[in-house]
Length: 419
Image (cartoon, rainbow, N blue to C red; front, side, top):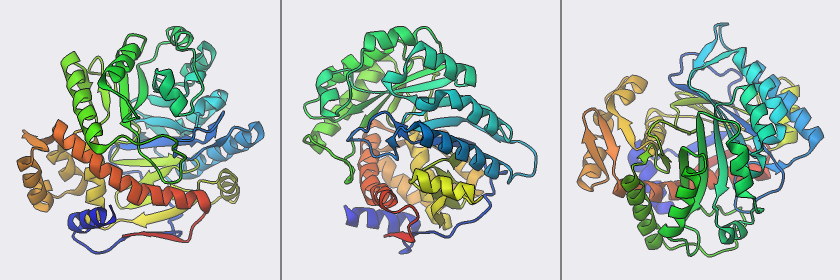
């Protein structure tokens, strides 16, 4: 695994230079001219902790949540005030967690603070736990300005909820509550590649979702982070590959539009993705900021986050200044997530030709059947999406796993070197 990711990094960046994250960071974030800028807000609170979940989270505490929200408002003000005074246009705003709906009555305040500095052009999304889906909570969120919701179902099958140690939800009641408050996008998340899972079981989950209010779904492969507590056997790579092909084939047969590696839309219009942005600003614990040549990640520790904000300091724990090639690889990785890499988009972002830097790699990928060329875009095939997942899996364990594990242990690490 290490050899594979090392080789890929060296080859694609044309350098032996590792990714070196340090605790030194800029006190000012220059984002006004960032293209396709998105916003992300992290709410780390959960009613209970799921053993399989790798994200930054902590058990809900009312007093801590109040202090955290106040700190979050101050962070937004600090970063928003770094602009020249004119509001900055952004593509979208997403709330993730954790379970953001645990502070549903504060979401409106947070959105209002953000709108002092930013103009949101493409809606506001929020992640929900199934138990958050009540008419009262949904009404509060819609009144606050939420237009898109993503419900973390994981599975409708009781056996898999037990494997994942998720509390049982009365889904019929949840669907009844959901029908009372309409949203532009209703997405439902599922996990595939669980032990014994078949395409028939996935079909049941997908059709159950689409027939009960969802117009968009996300079906993510299970990734085994080293610091989570998996208590079930992993599916073999061969089984996983076959299941992915069956899943994509079924969705194509039904006419569902694939709008990213793991997401499908029932109507071809609804979308939900907090990740596929060329640039984004992150607010809150563990939130990431990505600008043209700068990457920053906030501390995972809620108390330390609050302390930093109270000192009028950015809560950045680690930062990285990209080389040109490093930034290109990062750009292409997330562009490929959408199943489409635009030659014009690459040129607009870097003011350089895509083929001039990665012509050989694109030629090889076409010969291998991973991509096809369509006018000015390169489109990923189903075969390519499997190998993307394969690379994503190695990348996750070699890069994200190491970073998040370190951040869980130390609020402000001195550095992280990933070779």
